[in-house]
Length: 129
Image 1 (cartoon, rainbow, N blue to C red):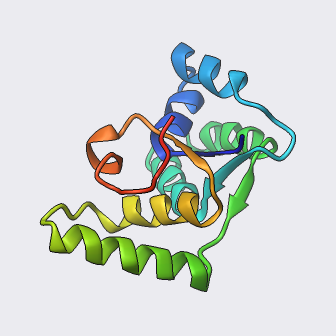
Image 2: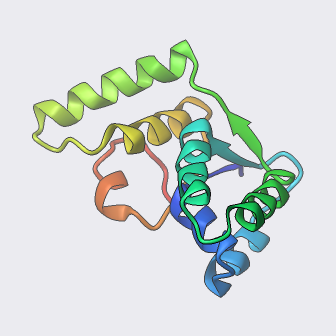
């Protein structure tokens, strides 16, 4: 099984949170761990406005050595559009950044590792860890 790691778990890992480090360490490696380019941007926002951006960026670069960064593709954007429309019709919209992360996971048939069940559990067909 392969995973897309959401920004919340990445931020916790970078902050040395024991639960996050244990979870990410327990997931299979060698090509099975991914992050969305959206999470990449969200984490860099945190890095740029942290107390020590140099150290934070260094930690993130270490993290990136074990994962593949997945870009937004045309197919991913089609999954995003379909899912956003479904959620809009049901009155259950969530932020676009979360939808883009979910669309990336669904496009690549990945299990999403996230703590944000409030938003992501609304998305039909998305597999959550």
